[in-house]
Each structure stands twice: as C-alpha cells, then as structure tokens.
Length: 325
Length: 285
Image 1 (cartoon, each protein chain N blue to C red):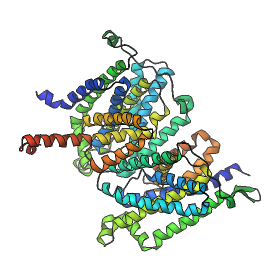
Image 2 (cartoon, each protein chain N blue to C red):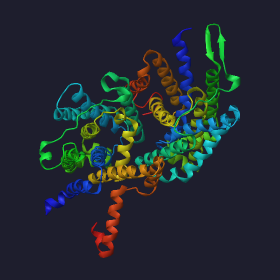
Image 3 (cartoon, rainbow over the protein chains, first blue to last red):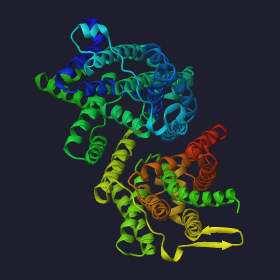
Image 4 (cartoon, one colour):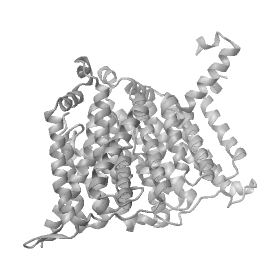
C-alpha cells in the first residue's frame, strides 16, 4: 500500500499511457503526446523544481532530433546507440547553455535562453551539409520490435512505436520521480524557494542548477530523438522558436512542480490543437485566446485546477476533509 | 565604391531600426522585469497599418504619424485590460499571456491581409539615390538614418529632461521608492508601455518600404529585440542604441561575407559580449 502511495503519479502516468490508445484514433497523435510529455517533464524539472524558466528547451529537443538523424542516416549507426548518443549530446549542450544562462536570474534568464535557442536555430540553418538546412534530414528510421509483431501489433502500425515510446516515457518518469524525491531533488526545491538561503547553508547552488540543466537537456534530447524517429525526419523546426515555446507553454498549462502535470499539459495542448485545427484554419487565434485565459485564471495550471475540484468534491462529502490537505 | 563601407552604412540604418525596436522593450523591462513576448507584434501591426494606409492612398508621411499613435493607444488599452493583471504573478504567466497575445495579433493580421506578404512602395519624394562623389546610396535609407537619429534624440530628451523621464529612470532603480515618493508607478508604466509599443510600431512603418510586410516579421523582430536588450543591458537607453547599432552592423557586414550565417553571427556576437560583460555593455550588475 505504501509503495502504491509513493508511486501514485507513476501509476497515474501508466494508466494514461494505456488510456490514450483507447480514446485516440491516431497512433501518431498518442505518440506525440508522450514525446512532448517527455519534453515537458524536462522543462518542469527546471521550472517547477529548480525555479529556472527556460525558453530554450527547443535547443535540446532539436539537437536530439538531429543527433539521431545524423547518426542513423549519415554514420549508419543502429538506433539504440544513436539514441544514447543523442541523450549525451542534449546533456552536454544543456550544461554549456546552462553555464552561460545561470549567471542571470529571472526575466533576464528567460531572454538569454531564448537568444541561445535562436543561436542554435541559425547554427543548424547555417550548416546545411550537416543538418540539411531548411529541408532537414530525411529517412530517419522508425524502430520496430519483433516481439510486438508477435503480440499482434503490425510492424507498420503507429501503435507499435507508441508502445516503445510509452515504455521509455514511463522509465524516464520513474527516474525523474526518483531524482525529485532524492536529497538532490530536495536541494533543488530549496534553491527554487530561496536560493540565498540554500547558498548560506553551504550548498554550491551553481552546481545543482547545472546538474538540473544537464538532466533536463538529456530528457528533452531523448524526446527530440523520438520525434525524429516518429516522423522519419529531423526538421529544422525541431530546433526552432516554436518548439521552445510549445514545450514551455505545455509545462505551464499543465502546472509546475508535479511530474504528472507535464503529461497533462502536453496532452491538453496537443489534443486541443488537433481539435481546434479541424474547426478553423486560423485556429492559432483560438489557441492564443486560450493561453490568455489560462494566464489570467489558471495560475496553478490544469493540475492545480484538478486538485481544487477534487478538494471541493471531498469537502462536500466530508467537511472536515479540507483540513487534512 | 567600397562594399564594406556600403554595408556599414546599411548596418547603421538597420541598427537604428533595431534600436527603435528594442528601446521600449528594454525600458519596460527595467521598470517592471516584465518580459513582453508581444513586443514584436506591435512592430508587425505598425507595418501592416502603414501598408494599409498607403494602399488606401493616404500619404506615407501621415501613415508614419498615425500608425504608431494608433498602436500606442491599442497597447495602452491592452496593458490596462490584460497585462496589468499578471504583473504580480511569476514570469511564466507574463510569457504565457504575451505569447497568447502575439499569436492572436499574428492570426488577426493573417485573417485580414492573408498569409502572404507584400511590398510597400518607397514614398515618391524619397525614391532614387543620393550621389556624393563615389558614394551612391538610396535616399530612403538615408532618410531612415536621419529620422531615427532625430527621434532617438527626442526620446533621450524625454527620458533625461522631463519629470516623467526622471520618474521612469528612478523607477528602474527602485519601483518601491518611487511609489513611496507619491508617484503613481502604474500610470507611468502604462505610459511607458504605450510609448514603447508606439516606438516598435514606428520601426515597423519605417522598415516596411525596405523589407516589405509579412505576418511573421513580428517574431523575427522579437528575437532580435531580445538579443539587443541582452547585449546592451536591460533598462538602458544607451545600451539599446549601442546594442542595436552593433547588431545591425554585424548583420549587414556578415551578409556579404557569409550570407547563410549572417543571422547566426549576431547570436555569436551576443555570446561574445556576454562572456566579457555578463550584464551587457551598459548594464549594471
């Protein structure tokens, strides 16, 4: 029972990965939710657990995507080592960007990370021999598993790649759960809440922030690698402004400081976009209005809203209940 | 004539436009640490408003006055109706609301004028070139440099020579102290916000005959403005000027040396400045 209680969010995430195929008709939409969910987890580790608001997550997403693209199509490496190297690339890049960015705080930090995101975008754009420039890298292989084919999931079915993505997603979720509940994670929270105090107690907050950046970069690059494998291309847009924006918006909409909230945010953003885009070609206008509404009325994100509603429901049944929470 | 000299003069013109673009962002930022991702959208609608007015047969000169004023009023209303409500919340909500606002503005532009850009004619009095010995240069670009220089002087006088200006400068040092002295900081902020948006719109109007208009020019402008604020130092008028000129000249010169990498080089320059001066050229630590 205690283990259940401790891993309740992991169980919730596992439940969600099973639920998605039941409610969605498109396997690639489901996979996309998990991939951006991963990216949002990486962003949440920075924003929700360390207090670092990064507008540069697209850098690591794009580098992961390019790394897998280049290693599989140019160097002829198999998928698994390519993905592992993509993760390493993300971690290294995040440490570098982080080293520059964490010298600043607050809004200045945000602008710096955005500027670095643009820098990496134009770097990718300026090196077409490596990245394919505007066209991106084509023919990135999508891995499939013989085991799943024997279970009756056709090799070409998007659900097969979904299954692989789901396993990886849950593994990362579990790892991040361990990271955030560890002494290291608690220290990050202390830095988020009061950095001066954490410094005064004797923590080298710089190293902790850099470590958080490296983990976040690794997770985000993994997401980018999967995005390239899902779509079969490593496009320039994966490293662009909109990827950074999307990852951050998903994280904030979901709610920060809770890992499951990131999956919620990614699912909400992608499913709503998918639905709105069928309504009206100018659906981005509606999305913009939704973002304005969220920022005015939903300061705890969707997760906070859910908690509040659950609290209300509990309170009605058991008026003393609210004192527990 | 020397191609580099030409590109440097081009860069000065571009840099002055960048200065107009960034100065409002920088000063609002200095006052309230408010990150405004909708700043590029004001540049965008400024350009489109001028495009529409010229299209209707209104003179460019009238558009140059009317478009920034109109955008200033719109920004003033938006600040009062929307943005003010998130100041007390964390930065991520500043970003969310202004990203949303920028999206809405961009889509409204596409809804009205379509997704494909268009050219804007150079006003008839400024068509053609100026010839000074071996120096041949388009009249309009020369006008942009002169006009923005005069405008920058006026702006500098407002900041340095008026009571409102001193309240703005004091406010960027300490908002609390200024409000304790009995000055309504919010009113100052609304004004500065509107002025910043109008200045960005002015940059849009001036840029339209040079680069044309398209619905995504706002986004491009936004990231350049951020780089200039980072390079120049936040909240600094001089920083925005020096940063704008530096970035403009680098971009212009690099576009002859390495066209594909011209955009990249402005970010490389930013990284170099940050290595030497973490708070920007004119920033205080």
